[in-house]
Length: 119
Image 1 (cartoon, rainbow, N blue to C red):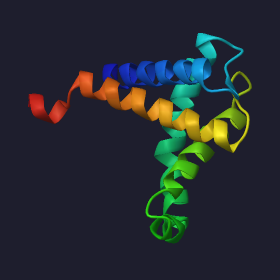
Image 2 (image 1 turned 180 degrees about the vertical axis):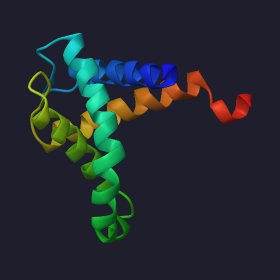
Image 3 (image 1 turned 60 degrees about the horizontal axis):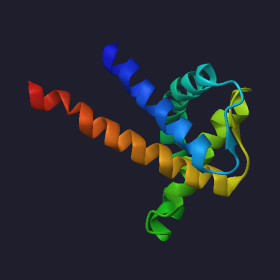
């Protein structure tokens, strides 16, 4: 449970940074909206993304994986559509925002370490 909360905080930090540097992404609701968006993004990535990934696998293969940027942007856009306090305005904002969130999440998880290595 603690790891889930830490991951949500890291994702919220990534969303905050995306709001700061990517035009078209905004969280007018403040940190509460960012935390809700982070949890919702985690749920969307766990439930919706695998289904959409399988359905778009041929496009992903043809584009040598570049379509995954569009897929990640779509997941971020879905969160923006579902949550009133979080706005993603357009495809390019979603793509750049998902890159920012992905990099921050990757760095955060690198700092947290892997639970399997502690074993």
